[in-house]
Length: 103
Image: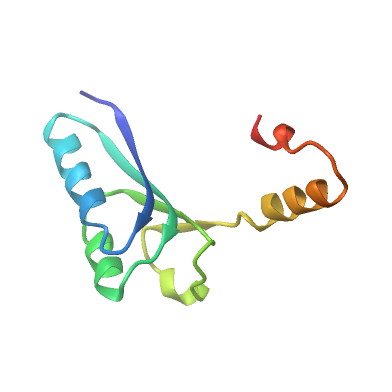
């Protein structure tokens, strides 16, 4: 009760699990609900449903390309993982450890 909930999904198309989880959390007294999705393969309907949901914010990575306008005026926030991938590739190429990327 009174908590901020963060629901993580590795891949989502419709967002229905995220929407239902937010509803349940709010029913149990959560004060805010946020979702994080690594591979956001959302359909247009999924985007619409998530924007109309009780989720306060949906954070996605750019592993699935969408033009920026796809998320304009919405609850969505996009985070780029490109610099992390670039550094991992550089380290592997130079035979360096990548464990430091995960600290």
